[in-house]
Length: 587
Ligand code: F6R
Figure 1: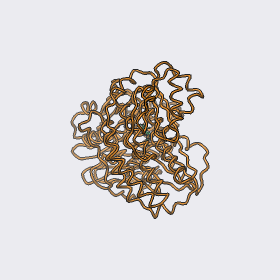
Figure 2: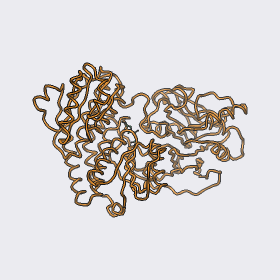
Figure 3: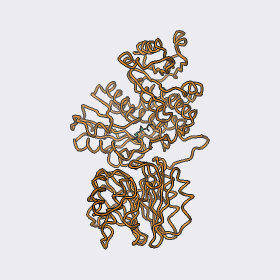
């Protein structure tokens, strides 16, 4: 989603901002822009597509102030006109914004009535127009006045033509961080953009003023406030692709090491704190892939703790009516820790008195800041939009957490199992190109399984659809004859996941029913195929042996590789599928 970087540096801040924009590319974007403020002039540059194009357009400059933006379109098409910075008034202000101004239609009508002419299709232009509407002697007043009118979420930074060497910024429900050293003052959506050192996290409703001399903070009415810096945390810097053609492939290959690191990091688990949690219900909450790991987590909790546990999509939990009490343990899972729905769900659960645990890959994220107990996913930076190693780490983390809640003895056994799994996973880096070639021309693909295998089917289908654009759907195997069989035609691919002995034969029966209607079957199971299965399936992949709860992590890896291969064969960039962003910071 959109990313913001601003810098004030004597001698030129252009490169600080371009470098920062490159570091937050992982958030996903479709255009980028930058404003250089040179003396009393705002020079704005914009480009559709990659940052490199913007970099080529922006000249070398000694301008002390620069603000930049990566845009992931929400309001208005992807085009230079709608790329930020957006101007307000008669080029008096330039604004970059992340978030959604929910009342922008009403505000646009109101402001148009006052003679403002809107030039873009963005909600951001309302902010720029509001800032330019008054000429208070102190521009902090303009910001305080403008934010009172805004509803929705925003992190924005703005420069005023008439103000030398200053950036103003404000936030509400979208992340924003500030940094000051004698040499440079910076503002950004992610502290990864800053030089090493302590930084400040803006809270909702706060305003910030950055200049060469100092950094100042104000409350929502523009009154000065004191803020303490967050101590510098080791930030996982983004490494390159190494020998791999794409980040996604590199990240899949990093899974065994990530799992091993996770097991080591989990040894530091605070048992005393964990034991204090008294609960009789568990809700596990996340979005997309993280929601799928919650489904498995809920299954672990039901099976091993015999507790009522359910997984919920954060976007549904946020507005739905789900009974929550002080005896509810709510677990939030998010790779980025910045998913707007997951953060809002955490706030709701806290308000209702639930005990909360957050599992995230980014320990300086908003989720980590707000969680009562934070556990690391330890996957290392994940850049490809499709989550791979983070999913596997989430599942392993939820397994170890469940076992820790069961008791110390169980916990240490689970650590050992996860460590062993890290070795087993390495044997799964197999060539999936033939399987991919079979799938890549299809219009639809079905994934089926029972119990935890159904969750693998869901995650396999999500992975394949998001990076191949093939219509993929997952169903519990037993549901086929309740409607889905109507969609099975000659040679429709059905990928069958069967790693649970208890329901193996049941899954096979459902698969064969699909075959009788013309389906082409592919099998991922935990045991070598029988002769009759070899006859019925185009391909049988047997997973190495592992404890049943961890088989989901083994089964998903070949499916991730399959999705990657199909994506490449279809000429798609698997790292940046269309219309998707890595970090979903708006609702
Ligand atoms: C799919 C994918 C998304 C994310 C979802 C939540 O491959 O990556 O479905 O899982 O947007 O993101 P996080 O985990 O950052 O909260």
